[in-house]
Image (tube, rainbow, N blue to C red; front, top):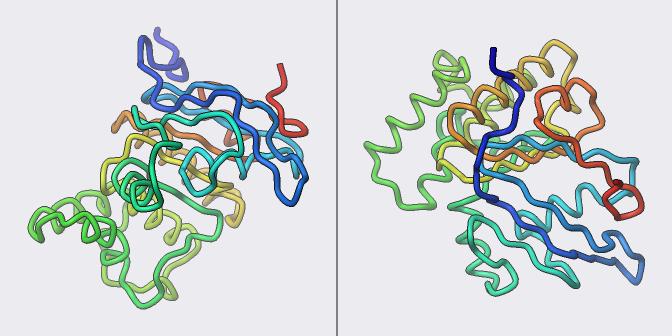
Length: 230
């Protein structure tokens, strides 16, 4: 029987990081990090607080620029892009899920999910179909017209996952996505992330302290003092 948690075979790297270094106010945070993540692969980033996990995630998504080294994302060298180019790349290639959801409070669940497609200029009928399909997939069809204040934490995170995947990104970056949820909702979110990454072939990089979260991943990368531990 095949291993359901085996990494995708013969998949090309969708993320390539080479000797990335980053410092803040003279304090080194990342020190020569090198790694690859393949299409469809789920990778957990673990390590003590201050080890550089979130900084590395920000460099992968083009939010922070490394001081040295290179990041290539879906074939695009991030160092060669200006601010507008990075923003376009993030809108088209990257989905992000945060610990605290970051939904727009004045928009309904459906409108929050639709928003990235509006930024990309997707026609209205296609937006409607894609939003309805994803809300159904995360089990929120009946909550489509509810605003975030009327949703539970687990429901808000499911909306955030649908929003992160609605534009069909190559990479999904998740920063402690279960850190603000109880254990039952956290388990549901992890199951959903695993299933959706399998279905879409999206690479998932997951910052976590949770052993339950690492269990859905193909690989764990441990950082300490800004370096990848062997």
